[in-house]
Length: 118
Length: 134
View (tube, rainbow over the protein chains, first blue to last red):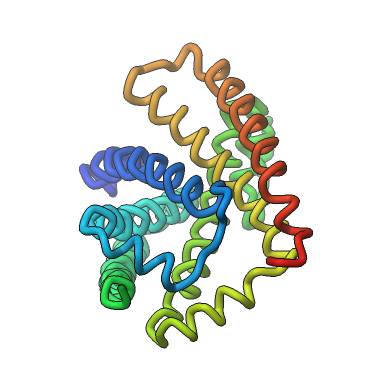
């Protein structure tokens, strides 16, 4: 780690691991439920029935920002491998935050779409 | 004297040349699988966005995606997810519990679990890929 990113790097490191642990748990459950069941079938009704439960809505509401943070912070690590200058680093970080927040908002709208469809 | 490699992937080739070890390869594979998963996550998000058009639009999208090719690609996706997840758990365990000494053993344990997972995946996914109903 270089000194330019400072304290942010430690938080990035910690949240990457915390979100990673949640995503590991989520993905095991998600893939088991959607792909490894005997009566395997996915359509609009299957999704809306699941999102009829508050527990699942909360679960997906945590999942959306968690996966976006993990993804953008992960790509940031790759950008960081190229030792960007301070200006570039700030611009890339700002872009990733804007994209992450915008896609999170879109994700919440999609969850609401499925919840309303039930 | 070592001559640093140039080009877009120069630094990654340097890492592999200077330290061709389990830790370096797992680090590189974690980067590669991570980038594949980011691309997949955006495609997944894009497909889910069809729900805005209602049930019929969403179901039409899903029906178009149920092809033998996509089911075969899903097997590859499981391998990518499996590697990233298991290696990620290993990295987190090494970091949190300071298990730096057994990190290579942990890597091979993760790979054995991955092989078992992939055998199960093939058993479940292959018939689906060649079933005329999906």
